[in-house]
Image (cartoon, rainbow, N blue to C red):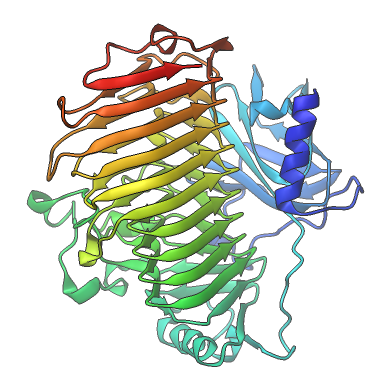
Length: 516
């Protein structure tokens, strides 16, 4: 119990200080159009007695609402409840069941998953109360409604929205998106932009692939119209996106609104557009918003420096391929903190792809305090590794609710991986995909031969033994995995003191494995 309370206290620190009142603030409601917000037919929910809007989005059901402290949840399921579990399990949230209703108390702001009958998920995105809300009419604040028509869900307004963004960049004023729907194709964000999406604002991507032009008309990985040349290699896969932060400095995008890429529709047209790409930029902050339904990687951070993504909620379509959560690529000083990500593909994939011929060593990437669900890898470095060096990478205090591979290092293109730390991460269960390994390290030679050196696992816990255990394989005696330390690691509650405790097959070209 002491450890649980310490964890809750730590969560309160990163979320800020909140009053002790046990109550939920007015819940977030959908935008004015039901077209984009389908009510859940399986779940209904109340927070401290107040009804919440539960949305059925793709394969999940979720609710996004602010809280000020401990909050009592009543979640009703439209069917028989045979069993349930509440994640992150490290918090020890105990629920009670009465008929089809499960009741429990959230300790405060955070990301939680109620799973019923081992299948249906209700994701509870409990935000801290906003403290930095710009008001239209205040000095230095402008409204996007001064540039676009409001109340039209089907009208594409790309040009008008771009004018508003350009004005915000030119003047340094804060551009506010009030509640409403804003249909658009690709938009570009420039330096000194401050963009606030109010609760109920929905930036909705076009459902026409032609509204996402590729850089220099470069051919992309079109699995519908050009199957022979399809590639999921990040160097060639995509050159388009909904929102582009390009060659910019001093950018902030924040709020409680939604950016939706219509990715399920446009990927079916063969268009692998990212949701957000931050390219060749510095000092960028994305905070608090929901980023949902990309056609490929959700947030691609390419050749950039000092990028922070904090408190962001990623909701991808579990059925759309290549929909990673966050992809730091040839970047430096990146922080991904206190985020939630539900992905078809990797939650985190730290890369050096050479996309757009932008390549440099990757350094100092931290991922901490997040909650993740994926059918693929969760905490991953690779697969594209085309720079000379990728170093000083920290995964800390993350809860992986479900994944195919918990922690993966894939050095396939010749880089030197150095000083990679997995500290105080927890993996709850295995998603039955094709690998089913808690840990998977591998060196291959696609376009170069690399190394993996100095990897630390400290105070990490795997709640179960994955079906295939763990696996580590270097390439050869010269291109090997050198220096892996396990300190305070547990599997199914048992301390790891040997390879057999990890269920690991005999490692190949691996040396200096230590157990503490």
